[in-house]
Image 1 (cartoon, helix red, strand yellow):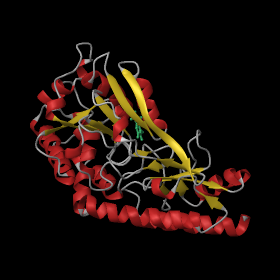
Image 2 (cartoon, helix red, strand yellow):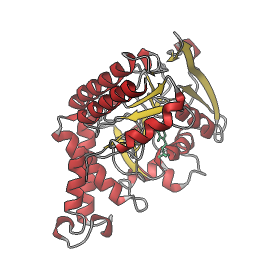
Image 3 (tube, protein in one colour):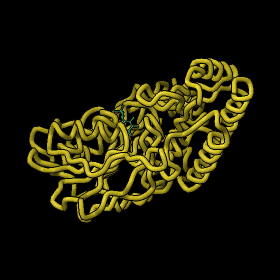
Length: 361
Ligand SMILES: *Cc1c(COP(=O)(O)O)cnc(C)c1O
């Protein structure tokens, strides 16, 4: 099989080493003669790797001991509902910074359960998408929480500052950026992430939540979304997505072997710089995102002549560069370059882009 580089936004590629390890023990895990997905989540073997996965994640992100780590169902969107149900009453206000389509999705879902108020939105600066930090004076200090998404997967919009929230707990949707760089967990009330971008297979989401925010769920909260039940039962109130949890654990081990999130941040910065410089150094390609807000994980770019999009996609796929089609709401191309994407993948993409421009430019 020829080598391919998979730029899918999610479910996204997983590290090759992890996939090979999973393959090597697929039908005979721990010499039990069966797969990890065929054993009880309450058995000693699974509990051991589940606990190790949590500990490795705690180590990787230096998660303080007054935070719970929950492994839950329902993906990122599940948390769009779980957060308002656990953190607010029907009359409460939740604050939202809308930097792209996922943080907008969180507003729409929260509005079913509380009064969601938008405190900031994407604007334009120098003809590009730009996110300004909302003023602290505009942050209603009686709000239940303040939700934001530091990396917008669809739009490729990111910001590296933390919204100023006063005493309102910050809730961050880190589905597409968790583990890509160091993170100060203690400044957040809740961090959540659907797994299928930077953690493992879909079906799992990780929630990191400060202890004092747990135990306030409304009575109508579905039990499987109740953070207190999840915390009390070590995320095994009902059957968790065991295979996804196992594979996430392998990814955490891989990250540790790679030098942790500091090493990842360095590699991710290098990868993004390579790709953006290829885009910026040519009139054939362009980015619509302001340099201050360019994502290091999801890189949308456009061809000057959109009529060439189809040809670009066909030929890139033939060259082993997969899933470069931009989201339908944005158009153009998008290269998702999460932790698992090696530098060689970016080098191959940039070479392809140069050659495509030479022939068609
Ligand atoms: C993918 C994604 C989601 C939605 O995840 P699902 O698991 O499909 O529900 C939410 N937020 C962000 C930032 C995402 O990238």
